[in-house]
Length: 293
Image (tube, rainbow, N blue to C red; front, side, top):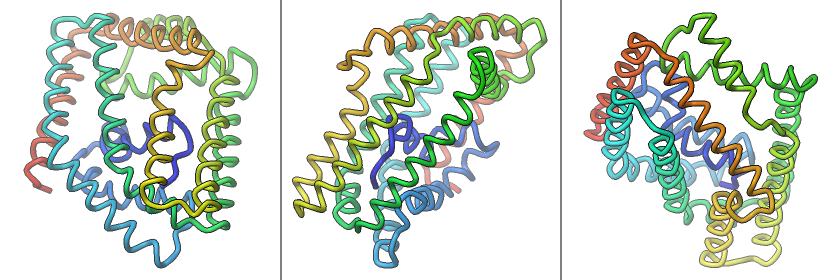
């Protein structure tokens, strides 16, 4: 199961767990169908053969069983912490800790899946690797179309619009005055989509090189797992080791400050909306952990 970029590394986790919070009013329904969504996501990247389809489905099913049994109660605790933070007024340090916790759990999930990822990487055929390369190119074209269209102001507007979709999910509707303040805070963040595109392409090239290495050298299970683990760890460590670290650090800090600004702008009614939504997710996670559909 090759992964196209750091954003897609997080995307696997989000598909499996957290993206459903933003994409579906029923977390339980989305999670219970997550194995199917993840299967079709993988198939869309490599066009699985008939032989691969059965054991890939089995691998995904086992991953979800592990996740349901070992991770969901922890998510309840994370959301309860978020509820307390929202009630008391979070600090930037609180948000940083929350962000770091999500990254840690994302990495743990991917490392847990390393044997299955390696099995698929070893089974890929040249035409499937070519399909993966074309999918990367299509994704990059889509990124350019959405994120790099027009001048700087147009790109700022698009980023602001995407942010507002998430904030409205959490807090409900905002007034025009609030939106104006949020737009100002959004625009204060660093903007360099060329860097993000370059990072995407870099990681995609690393993935393509890795799966080609697995095939050309006919690597065994353990050697392939080492290659996959290297890709996963690079996806998380890149922001700390790259010569672009100053930009990455400033971007992360600005995003945390942006979220904190929005929270501070919200009314008690909007905060109550967020509390209710989080409580709904807590209830769903508890039911899912108990294997209730």
